[in-house]
Structures are given as C-alpha cells and as structure tokens.
Image 1 (tube, rainbow, N blue to C red):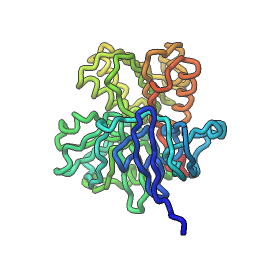
Image 2: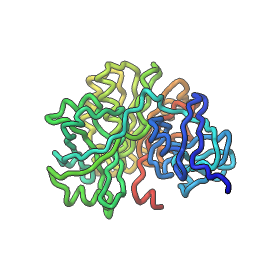
Image 3: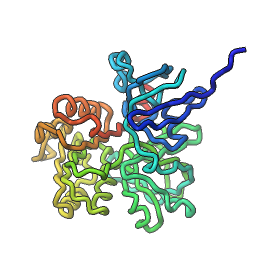
Length: 352
C-alpha cells in the first residue's frame, strides 16, 4: 500500500528557516505552533497581510477574500499562508519575525475591571491578568483573541505598551472595542458586559509591531479603532526614548470619532518629533471642523509624495490598508518591505 505523507517541510527564504506542517494544517498555523512568526493579521483570508510568493511545491487554498488575494496574484504564484495547506514540500519567500523576537502564545482567563465609553460607539475595556500571568509579554501593536463559549474568536489589538501593563493598579490590558450593531460579541460588550465578568483570551498574535533596528522616519496610519495599536506604539516609543521623526495620520468620519484626540495632542507636546494630522472624511457644517478632510491614506501622499526611506505602519479597515499599500508602493516609492499593516476585519467581513 502507498505510504501516506502526514507532514511536509516548509522552507522560508531568504532566511532559510524551515519547519514542518501536520496533515491538513495551514502554513501559518504550523509556523505559529513552532514559534516561527510569519507576517499575518486576521488568520481568516480577509486581510492579505500573510500574502507571500510560493517558489516551489504545491498547496491547496481554502476560501478567501479576493481583496486579500486576487486571481492575477494567484497566477503569479502568490498564496495566503493562513489559507494554504501544503500538498508537497514547499519553499516560500516571506519576511518574518525572527525566532528570538517571538513571544510565547498563552491562553488564560481575564477579569473585566473597567468599561469606559470613549465615544458613542467605542468602549475602553480594561482586563485584569491572572496573578501567574502578570508578566504577559507582547510587542506593542500585537493583538489578542477572545475565545467565546461556542469556540468562535474575536480579535482586538492591545492599546497599551507592554511596559504599561505593570503600571496599572492591577496588571492588565486595555482594548478599544467599536460597537457593530448585531455583532455577537460587541452587542454583549455594550449591552450586557459588566465589571468582574470573566473572559478567556489567547495571544499575543500578529506581526504588526514597531521595528526598532532602524532610524528611518515613521508614518503611523490609522482609521477608527485602528488607532489602538498605534497608541501602544506611541507609548512604547516614549518609554524607549525613540527619537525618530513620526507622523501620525488618524482618519475618521466625524471629529467626534477621534475618541482620544486630546490624548494625542498631549503626546505631541511631550514628543517634539511627533507630528499629528487628523483627517475627517464626512465633516458636517455643525462640526465646525477646520482641519484636513478627505481620505486619510491620501493625505499622507499629499504631504509626502515620496515615501522612499520611510517605514509605514497602517491599521484599520481592509479597504484603507490595501489602498495605502498599493498607493504608497506604486506611486510613493515606498519599499514593500517597509509597509507593515494590520487590517481590522469583523466577523461579518470574514463571513462575506
């Protein structure tokens, strides 16, 4: 009888790091299991952050968004590691977090300590870590996942820098959760969740975090609650006395949606190298908005037509992130390796 191959080897270039996959295991799941963190965001084929080129071998691809991976890209041998299951030994070309930079992924219960409305549809949720996990480690910009009772998951970026976890009255994490009416989890957060509730989380996840081995100017680009991991990055930069020039572009529909606008202004006072540009896409006369208007990703190129020699960190809606990626790399001379992104995909986005 023929021998059934239950695992395959994955070689990652240019690092030449290798790992193996189990039967029916995606490339990304195998890498995370073995503490080798490839670039990724949603893990559901919706954001495109894990897209890479397959140099050798064959894979089977699960369903995914055409925005994350187009038919034209497939024809050029691009794959999504979160949806690709090897059918042979394979080689891929991909940037990655080095093995030494990856923190262990942990599952743990957490207790809700604070629920604070930051705007009409954004809630600040603070979580207390268990005593034995009070040294929970992550990179500023990474996210965690809530594991719900039915096994489904919801992902949210941590809005505090790692050092700040220990500065809370009790070691904990801060999240910014936007209400999506009809959403299983966000309806619960805004209608039923109470302090002292116990939830279960797993993390840290994601390759969206500040690269500190560079002196290049930084562009931080956020839409909506995509500001949460950007906030953690700013706190981390201030803590580490990082003096690189930083431009923060935060976009929203209305001025009231810039839910921590005053906080950013305070940071700009404390960080002379920080330039803050809020951008409103749907300003109304009653807003009396005197600042920038339009699409936030376009404001960056209006101010800096050439992004050569910069690093960009973009977080928010998938359409904004992908438009920024294409515009900056195709027209702004940004090196694709210097565009780091985390696209926020809702459960509805993933289902679609």
